[in-house]
Length: 181
Length: 94
Image (cartoon, rainbow over all chains, first blue to last red; front, side):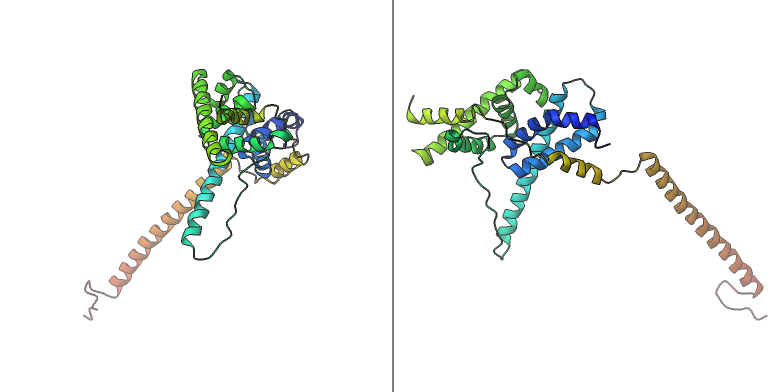
């Protein structure tokens, strides 16, 4: 039953966490709402399969991460298809240019510009580096919790975070050279 | 620390103290709507029963077709013998 009290309680406890995690991945309010809906539908449909061998929050994090990454992949495929369609089409179709800089509603006013640059840089990381960075720096999960969500070892998380920081410094350094110097 | 390094560090720290965004208050209703609108999936037993019935129907059709075909064949032979129809499709008038 969709409207059962257990599901409602689960939604009330975890919806903010799921929505904010999706927002950090997708950097778009509408997309984050869509994926949050997908996540809770998946939770509703597979709640009976949850074995309790991990914390329920870990399980929900895992679903949210997976769904967000799937959404990004689908969107990228559509973008590539639209790009090629545009190349091979004689008609001048409307090319939707999405905002390069996402403004998170929770960022302090004085940091808005730099936060937008950082979000754009995070978006360029590989899936695993992005996940490790978001869960560690923005969600403030422990290495053990990140390892449980990603189903990898703690040393792997440490390695991913190290490489994510290196990649970010490189991306930000290049941005600085082009735009801020 | 040079200007570039400072800029990178400040940018990396720009998400410190990030406040959580508020969830759309209508999101739960949207989820309930989508769950209610979800297409009902037939139980697997019912699916197997329907598949078995369909297969039985096909087999029955094949069986009836083959039986009636061989029956028609034998009836034709009887008819041919009755009218002395030869193998080369000519009629023996003798």
